[in-house]
Image (cartoon, rainbow, N blue to C red; front, side):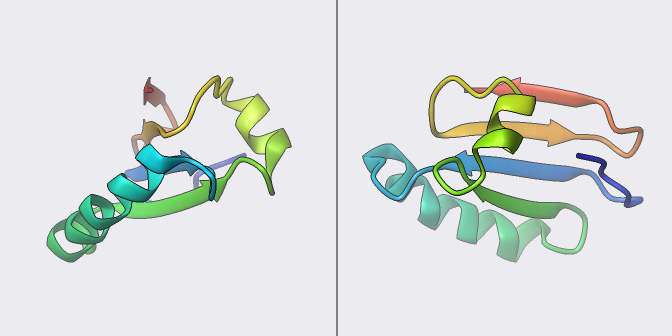
Length: 77
């Protein structure tokens, strides 16, 4: 998966059955309101997009990966 933007991206890996993911949903909405013009927010359901989750070696949800404008990823589970 390539990130082609001059803006960094915050990729959120989640699942509809994950309680912690549901809790984070409101926080992500607030972040979008505050930083929506300076960060791309990408939300990926691991149950629907397993190959992408595997590509980023997602072991648990929620997992957040920040991809800078050079395409370098930093993960935090």
